[in-house]
Image: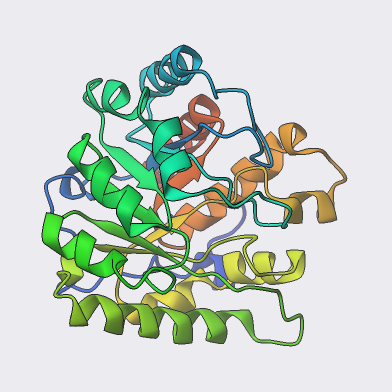
Length: 297
């Protein structure tokens, strides 16, 4: 997607969208149809937690969680991403055991999977991922990129499901070049994936906006997404309601729709194939209208 406004002379925003390598182009039946369209797919966020940074507790009850999944699907969500442990990127999240995480998911996950839209399990625990796949999850979304739980890569490989490898850090380092840090991190994760025999075509990379990054580094990561394309894998971006938006325009998480859409449109323009969002209807509309306008050029 090229710029929506302004002259078409050579600028950083007018660069052509980078291509995914043919050897890593998704062929998995869950991913393949999502990448065949002229606009990015949308992954709707479903947090069944009491303490997520934006909507903690809002969908903790099983019926409200399933109803929210139905509403996101009706609004155009292509994937429902279910998480039962807060990984809030600014700290203060309570660590939960695998047993508690599974207990939160048990009344919800299979019911959401039965709705027919692909389900992603947002977990850093191999034990939870293994169980969730058995309940109908078709994608593993690991916020530690196969580097936290040594069994995660084996679980993903054994089930043959796609995996989202997200960049993360235990703490932000304001002095680091965040894109170089991400590339080094991803190379380590890809080595882990290769060792476990996870097919390249089942891998999606996520720059982890807000995770182990200052607000300035989150914005730099979004501005330099094209540099991550050197790795050749499709990208997922989740900038929804993140704190960097408030560093530009003071706001609380639920007041960041405009900033989220701005970041996501630029991410799609610069190569992101999946957008992870809380506000599904608005995000779907923005991406599709932008693609329709671009089609008239």
